[in-house]
Length: 137
Image 1 (cartoon, rainbow, N blue to C red):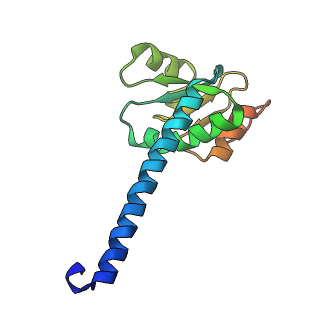
Image 2 (tube, rainbow, N blue to C red):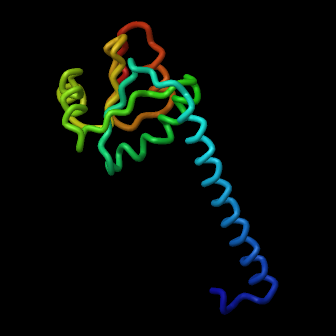
């Protein structure tokens, strides 16, 4: 396609590519800033997030978890279950295998509420802030 472009179109394309590159750099910087901010927040021991390192479903849940943590002003307790036997046992203790059968899995020890899978921030917020048992799945 570039072969058929005149010099004006090639210049516009080059400018657009530079803009896209700059925006990608800004996005990476913003994400790093959010991560830095989140790491400063206290962790809530009642809000458990079970995950598997390298799990594609867990990766999809990550932006929604960031949204939740920013809204709550605290972090969820992260428990990697694929490589950590102790966390895998905790997953079993809270009923993860029966309630979800995999990861990601969210469990609120204060209410017994759980969420299975990568879900939207709104659902996770209801899970985290509820004071009574809810049906979230």
